[in-house]
Amino acid sequence: MEINEATQAFIHAHQNDDVRKLALQGCKDPQVNIPLALQQIKGRQKAKEKLPEHYAHDGILYPATLSLEQCSSAATAHYKTSLADGDSLADLSGGFGVDMFAFARHFTQCIYIEPNGELCDITQHNAHVFGLTNIKVLQGTLEEHLANIGMVDWLYVDPSRRDPDGHRVVTLEECSPNLTECLDELRTHTRKGILVKLSPLIDIKHTLKQLPGTHTIHSVAVNGECKEVLFLLDANKTPVQNTTCIAANILRDNIQSFTFTMQEEASAQPRLADAPLPYLYEPNAAILKAGAFKCIATRFNLQKLHPHTHLYSNDTLLSDFPGRVFRIEETIPFGKNARKSVAERTNKANVSVRNFPITAEELKKTLKLKDGGDTYIFGATLSNGDKALLLCRKCIGII
Image (cartoon, rainbow, N blue to C red; front, side):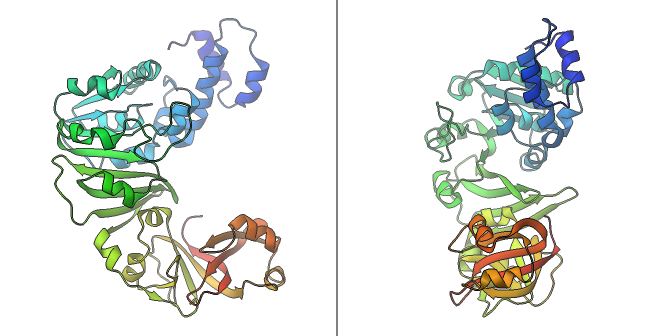
């Protein structure tokens, strides 16, 4: 993929413009490659927040939208570099190469494998822009090149979550490569272990059974939104009796981290609240994805509203809780008079539900509320089975 001067000038002149309008307007200069220019403009606009290091370099090339959407963010790529160390690493499902570039700054030798020729060309070009000379690019499939990579310290796999028709898939069997079929062979090529990146929609407990030798699972969120789940596997398939789980919420200035084990969660016995206490606690998305529904309560001495309602309460404010904390101003029974009771207090709120018979959107319509404002309403089931609306104000935590 090469960009001539006319196309580069067009990209620079319109880098902040609406891509859809540019597509309709076109360009009178025949030397400008409009499809390529639009792809680069759209890529730069998406990279501004997701990939600031890429955005800082005018010479970076961007792939089609799908590859850019599927790639890791700079924040999660940097996080992964803290999980693996050594001299050599092979990325078996290269993509746009964001993770590869992050690893290349920490490993002496890196191998990038990708069947898409355009992505391989883009990765080679961008590696040169970043000054990374330790990446060997191999075009082809994992099956074609696995025998050629020899033995490395770490293998990194981010299976494609699209089927041949382009539809999203989630389970390991549907992804490519299918790790349930090739995991044993992969282990013969690594000295230290395998790092697997999977969708935030993955069923962790089910997947854990499919990936024997997993010693640690990382649930990774960025600013409260779960982005990926990482499985760290031993190289020698040693049975793991008690897998460690780390829920990491990457914020602008720090990382909220909550570590627990599967056994701790299974044995935890949190107290149930007879009624909501003054402060309401909502764990961040990484903790909820990791499944720390009980041990988060016992660790912070909180009372659970209901065994299946993942909201917690106490009568003192905890400033170090990894999530959002609210002051409950009123608890309103969810019944025929609920709309009138809420309307007397506000016409605008941020609505959420936990273990509730209707969705947040349906509840908002039922209460005839507008979005936004300083009021937060949680529809939830309490310990006695009653449905209630908790009207709150936020104390601490991200939006």
